[in-house]
Length: 329
Image (cartoon, rainbow, N blue to C red; front, side, top):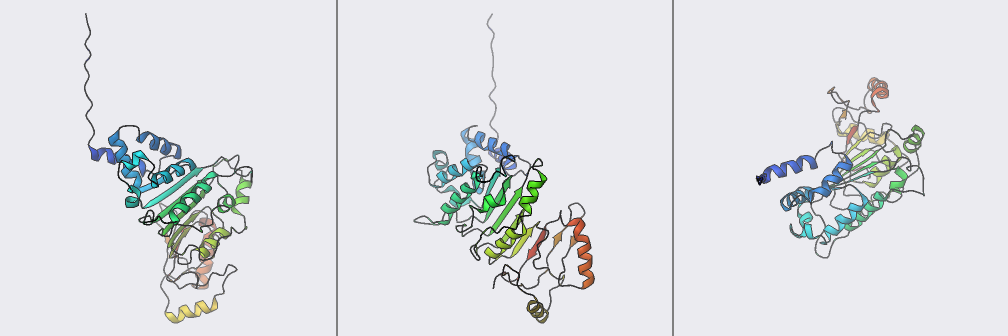
């Protein structure tokens, strides 16, 4: 007796559903770096339809999760990828609006200076170099507006010893830089990293195109030098709690009051000039819905009140600053 096996073809999912699945995973904040790498590798192997949809989604907001992928990305931009060329030459030039670099270093090797360095800094520099220098016909990625760098277990000096922002892409207006460390990192090492007062050597006015800066996990020195380099900055978001930058009254002052305040204000050791007042918000812990306004130019009572509150909340709340005029004169 012969057994008969029947098979039923599995229907293809509609294109809209496949694209929704890919987009949900691609933009998920909960996706671990190792899982993102697996997702990127496997998405081009499922079938041609899935691969083409993945390429279309990932080309809008590019993720570079490893130094080796930075090399692949540059090959794609040069038209050396058969798979990406099938979607059309210059795909990224039409669609790319952001690039996110992500890297997780070895916490055991993080403090071994000179003997071990994070290759992602060199990979980022290579991408900056290619994007900064235009091609013979047009600028690379003309729609690129945001660059984000998320580094885990990477020291500040290792990163800034390679990245000086001399060739930062001109078309980018938003820059996010975040340093994080694993829970297993020794507290003494963290203190050495975050308490450093060593300058990083950024050139004043070297990044005039940046309008919005987000900086987390860095030192006051790094923040001050970035502010110096970003001469036309309009907004800043940071968790550097001892930054003594421009604090603002809740209501804008008159022109006379502004002039008087600027005359009384001295430039600090980095040469950052005073700026005009503007309302800004300092966001408290999430869930409480609290909004505070820093008022360093306000009354003595307000300053004392803010100082007493700072000790309990400063370590957990980022601050957002805004400028009506450039930082540098």
